[in-house]
Length: 68
Length: 258
Image 1 (cartoon, rainbow over the protein chains, first blue to last red):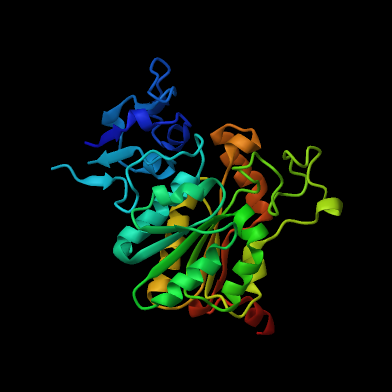
Image 2 (image 1 turned 90 degrees about the horizontal axis):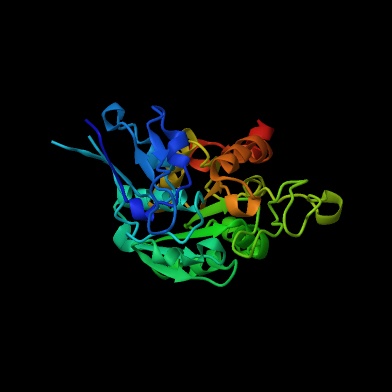
């Protein structure tokens, strides 16, 4: 099973990972605000992740680590 | 056992970037760092930072960095590389306001001399750091701070197409234009950047990769919309592809003769 780790406090909430995810399981957490004041990205269904690395490829801030 | 399939490259220092949300500078920084990691050249790499948004690139790369005067990165890189050509790997990282405007002369002459350096050229069609003025690479009709009615080519001339321009010289070894607006394009960009470094390791000569990039803040768009704009407006004007690769026999002038 894939494991996604976000450095939540470094996320700038640009949403490029959300658009890149082919499974549509990423979203910007509307109910959370990080240290920078952005809604950080989060995974809604980690079991559905296939570790394709599309989100991390598009993340401009390099905050996503993927294990499988 | 968990296997790490994606992590921050070692050549990229673990500090947050100062770039705006959605700025693709971060993606290109990562691709450069990945190329340095993969070729195992971190300890002998010297990067030359430009003036522009990426002026503080020296804070992010885990190798020696020099900050050059505006536009003069290829000249500084030439000096560094010639001081120890056997052991040093030298790259410059420049934006369009740096490389295609004030630094055009340095770029063209470094290419003409076929200096064995690697240039990463970020083309986002605008001056980012100074607040969104018209750049030499701004598209015809593009609205910027200094062209509020759109770039008028009768008044301001036409955009500079760096890859096409340099491909007419006999000097350069490798010229390619890539984009970072989708996963597919980022993967192609990574391959091009790696090749540009590989060419230098093999002593082949001047390699330049032009990266079509976005600037959501100064274009006045959301990050996602900016990437769409790259696809719809910039790529048609700046076609992607290899413009010159001497080792692979892609030489524009020779093609016409044959």
